[in-house]
Image 1 (spheres, rainbow over the protein chains, first blue to last red):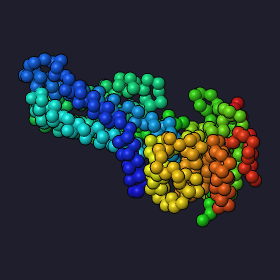
Image 2 (tube, each protein chain N blue to C red):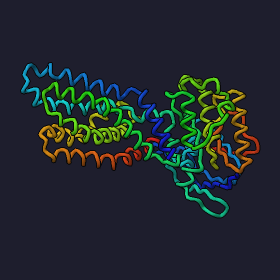
Image 3 (cartoon, each protein chain N blue to C red):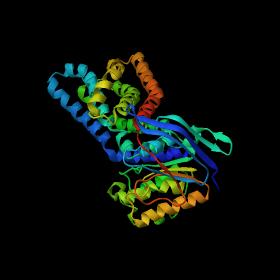
Length: 210
Length: 204
């Protein structure tokens, strides 16, 4: 138990200092506020396209915020030590992804309601975002683990993850309607990602090491 | 406390990127023995260490045994092997103190005065990444002191260390062997380990 606590504490302080989360949140907030300028002075149009736009921006900020999640530990040799530890690599990867998700979600929890109010859209979108965000982060993180150590890892990450986030893009904006089905689908999307991704990512990291 | 684990490699070859980087190695080490791997750059010393640690894929057989009892390699690799590679395995963005407190919580051991022993007490509050490579290497030895494990795999343990630092490594190795621990060290310079077997490795 104290072993997982140690990894968690290390990851929290590393993530806070890494700054990747700030880039992701910054992109989300700045693009979210700039988008209405491009759409123009039409309140009705903005309130209907705003949420959809926000989901696309969300995907982008996740990619940007998650990029390089495993690089530091791979180059510093820390991953090898996690492989050779009692807790094993999967637990480490799960903690890394969960912490990355936390750091992404917290700033967005403040920014999203403000942006939705600004667009004049339904605040129900925030709930959808909370439900879908673990799925987005875990999926992008896993592709990031596969892409880590490659030249041009970032574009690879974006293009390989885009098809995998389609469920969130399709059902995310629909949460504004208040219908229960999109919420359920987003929750399932996240649950399967959280269940599968730590194993996939740790297999990918092991391959990088060998 | 004493270790009683031995190790056997039979006809171990390692491939990387589709070609052999280490030609067949057969060796056997009993508790308390040390082996120095000799060979030039690219001769496969590191590959052999990584194969034993289970980090690299290999052909052949590596068995760990206590007496006549064969041990589960998966368990041994997560509980009884320390691998100290060329990289420190620590977080360069964290301070020395934070790294120490992580390691001690991670291995569930009290660091006591090990930072003084490693000669790093003065640098407690500096970021690890700001220290010299020799100092980072010294701190990477902390794992060996915190968590007693039977088999140490050391990749160029003396590189970047001054006389004082090399002395620390030698002392650690001696104490470990007295307890029955096994050491495999990859070395390419003249300094060797006392009373150690030597194996010359070559790439095919």
